[in-house]
Image (cartoon, rainbow, N blue to C red):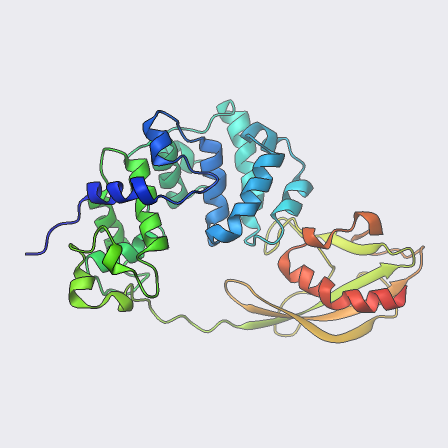
Length: 353
């Protein structure tokens, strides 16, 4: 009879093999009494939504250098935070980050709530993030289930129900294993197991601390799990981006509406994004078609942006947007799709000066 997976076996492995992450308190330090900073745990969890650890590390370190605590972030200028977030994607997270920081300062005296319900009442914190903060920051026995945990549970129990239908069953299986002792370390241990050993491709079963109780290993089905329902093909939307440069080198940018994709971010004025976008230039000018498209993929659709460029005089009066002086224009502060527009248009703009 196959043995049952034990949280203690995983914790023993984690004590030796825990990843060194900038927001993490190591198991040795935690055992010595060091407690995680809820602000750093919250910030890392928001950044890690739909984003890899490798991509998040430098952003996390930059944010915590600029804004070392929740009060500092709450008092930051919106534009500064959005600019630092540029390139990380899913920009609604940055807007909710500021809303949440300000709610913690205003409504909770600068301290994050210590209950899952209290955390989930804050802007931008859903069931997963509230569970992660509760477990990791406050060592409460909450069940934390991300993609890594789903993969580990599916293989451990050889569960072939496809995702997302399998989510409730996988959560229940994860909940049954969550221990009362060291639940914060355990939550991170399961995620580390999925990230480093029980990987999507070529899992290293021979060195897994749960190799003996793993049903998928016994059945030889590890590579098939977790199963996923087929995704619907993404539609393609079209749009037009207008890149205007003034004679002094200033670039026309606008702040996008708070709601919707890239909300609150700086970008080039443009048309709607649809199957048949209507031209909508931000000012009268001799617009030239660059002859190239900026292509980008969002979660639910592909985008192809036709790029129009124009050189305008110093008295140009845009209907929307503001000219940013050349010395303060930072392409790196633009969201990724707008940086692609800049990269394609940059050469033509230099020729125009």
